[in-house]
Amino acid sequence: MDSVKTGKLIYRLRHEKNLTQKQLADMLGISDRTVSKWERGLGAPDISLLNELANCLNINTQSLLNGEYEVNDVSEGNMRKSKYYVCPNCKNLVVSTGDAEIYCCGRKLEDKKAQKADSEHEIITEDIENELYLTTKHPMTKEHYILFVAFVSADRMNIVKLYPEWDMQVRLPRRGHGMLLWYCTEHGLFYKYI
Ligand SMILES: [Zn+2]
Ligand SMILES: [Zn+2]
Image (cartoon, rainbow, N blue to C red; front, side, top):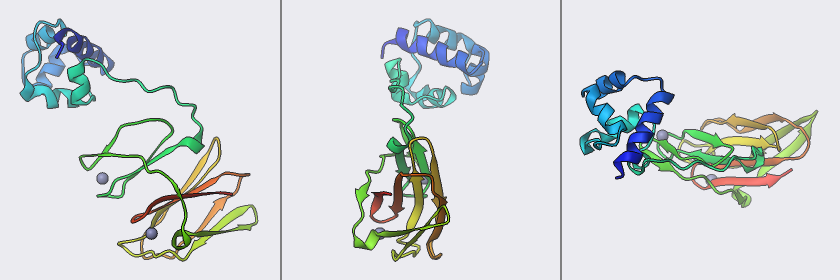
């Protein structure tokens, strides 16, 4: 650990959160003189405090140790390039328009790569009065179901969350061409262009 770099980072993050040295010290149950020392690079946080300090500053421990965090390239914001993360434990869905580190239930999530649907995962689309009407023969049981359907164009996205033991019948507003994505809890993310 480079205590000067880490100290500067602590200083910067503390200011971003509008905390005084005393306030941060109180959160950690230490003296403000200790915080002041870290920030001047005159000492490094004790291992036993690292996790809690990282939490207080909303940064991960590794970045705190490195004294810097990586800044992603500015994303073009093209919704079609969005990334989809699904937590295997709680089925939480997170959508990001750029690179992101996503954690849920204590685990790091990988973004799901979309694949072309096989016959089991086919979604039937019909145009009905400016809407897309979607149905599927895919199972909708608690163990194996379609978790969400999304229709994505360059600047907007419509997501419909689905629940097991309901027949899948989804209506989405249709706005030109776009990509339809859907996620099976067992087999992952699928797409097709419409
Ligand atoms: Zn989770
Ligand atoms: Zn499936």
